[in-house]
Amino acid sequence: MSDGGWTVLQHLTANSTEDFDRGWQDYKAGFGRVLGDHWIGNEHMHQLTQAPRHYTLGVKLVDMDGEVKWGEYEPFQVESEDSGYRIRLGLFSGTAVDALTQDTEAYLHDNQRFTTKDRDNDNYFQNCAKLEYNGVPGGGWWYDACAGANLNRRNVIYWQKDCNKEHPCKYSWMMARPAQQPPCSQSCRCSKDEL
Image (cartoon, rainbow, N blue to C red; front, side, top):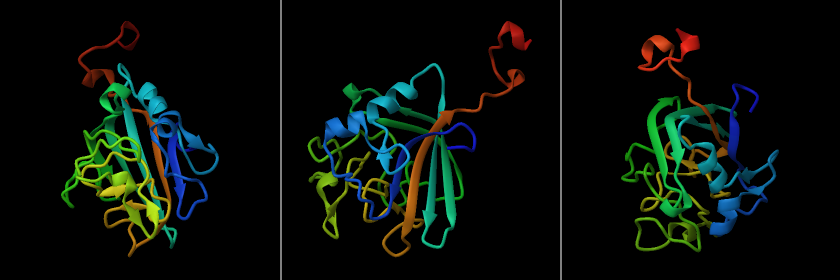
């Protein structure tokens, strides 16, 4: 994205022709077109968000009338494949609803492992990635049991009250960038050049 050094992790257009109903290996490696609808890949997200640098997750949603909602989580990390690419999220700010760390619909996505149609890591008695809406499966996501948000179901971009079947959205983006570092006076460690 051109506004502030964001790396686009995910982009989806409602009713996209890109197939998001994929297995573990596709979600691990990534798929789609970087300039179109895509998923950058869980392994790439893991490599990008590893310590010692902290990252921010940005979410941008555009509804059918062109209204934009956004949100940021800081810090943001995707753990290794051994952990099931578990997502870790910090404090939220923005104009969108906090649909990942608040359980307003009894679903909490923070600290969840990633689920795909061939690897069920969610907390539901069925595989959330296989559940269909209008004949389209959910796609891979950090499901709880199942979702207060899901940006990978191509016929309904879902983000609680901001994007749903009653209030449809046309586009979604997930992005990451290095977190804003506090000035040296607010940090407990300063390099010699900062003093």
